[in-house]
Length: 425
Image 1 (tube, rainbow, N blue to C red):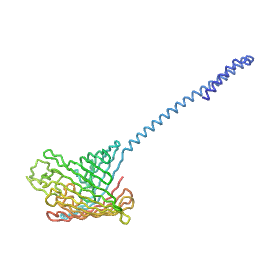
Image 2 (image 1 turned 180 degrees about the horizontal axis):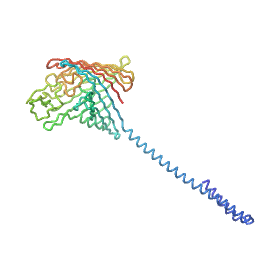
Image 3 (image 1 turned 120 degrees about the horizontal axis):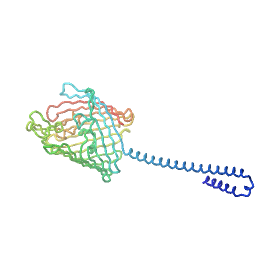
Image 4 (image 1 turned 90 degrees about the vertical axis):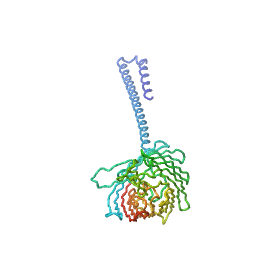
């Protein structure tokens, strides 16, 4: 605007100079020189105005680019914020000493897991996790034993599911999911098992509940084994103590009479290697094939009390289960205690558990693969110690002092100790 006014003033001066009486009195050459100077000034002002307009256009374009860049950055940041990544690595040395074996076994093993959760929208998220394959696709192990000629170690899908917040306090999970029920520190369920199917979870105040339906097998010539069940529980502070308790029931369906192995002479047309063996459960031989004697319809009760002892966190827990479909050897129970919590740097934790699992108290494929060698018909103690030298770095020591074949056969001792270095990232 200022330069436009200057240009107008110059134009007026040129006109006035041409029309004034004094101009006629001057010589023609002086008047022409003045006009030329004024015209040059006007041209300069007009050039400056053009430059100003060009600069303004460039500034406007830069502002638009910055705005678009910020919008794109915000969009990218929103996309990235939808993902949460996690992983861990564990190196283990262990020694296994069954009484019936001629020599004990020492080995080194590794476990690696990596996964992410992705927020799809405000109601739905997805989770995918990969883990080292425990060999022969063992559902109870993600460990890989090292020392096999530097071969490549396998990776498999450990978790793959969607989680839908269907209603307030209610989630539905579909796919290969984490174990959905409340557990204490017992060894009736191996922690590496990731079931496959559908889960409905509910939580409202102190009350929680779970219902689930899982597929255990897909057999073309026989009915499919399944796992159906549910649990109802409560978590309630009681002064300085927080108590958590739950009652559950699950039915391992249509496993009775299933063939568990295929020795020479077995003539069954059903899957001859259902879960790779009976894992301690009672079998009968029909047509040369070992078959499970029972179904497994199990009532389960768990309880845990959390409180402080001498300024340290402490937990006392117990579990009881009974297979209502078995006539004998149908009961299992455990009890234990932990003191401390190994999490931040220079923190520690100790624990002790006693457990007894009669021969048909639990479906053998679910029993922890370390306790008693991963079978039922076992009892004994477990001692644990953990120390965190630094955050996200944990040293664990575990000693299994168990006995096997208590209900049927000759009782044998089973000792196993493990030293772990575990890292989270």
